[in-house]
Length: 192
Image (cartoon, rainbow, N blue to C red):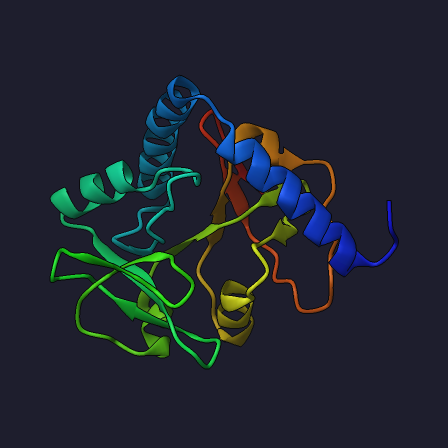
């Protein structure tokens, strides 16, 4: 294995991406049920009335059933919208339609609230390729969430959402990588 963390990350991301692509449909469905239940537990245990959450790509942990539950129960959900300057904007997605963002990620349409809107949430849910037992998060390499979390003065709890096999012993860490406070898998919630 190479020593350069950038190279190690690239290799690990490719392996994890392939594993996600090859996951059988029935496993994905069971995982979605588990994610929805665990995320509902997390919101209940933290007392969050507002949170940020991404809309998942087909191979990612499916956040949509959870988001639908949250909105149906009167919780405020902020969704990230990518910007060309490398920052995230936010919307509540009141148009109830989705478009492909800058990098093909699904993003809801709605009024853009600005990068600072994230400061008003009680909980932040982020995507990840993997997370280790120290809270080091391996993202997908664009740095949007690292920049957002690194710029926040007072950050609410941040939880990464990954499949069980992506909660690992160790992932490479670089100076710019922002840690998370916990991880949510289909079978458990782990706080660091």
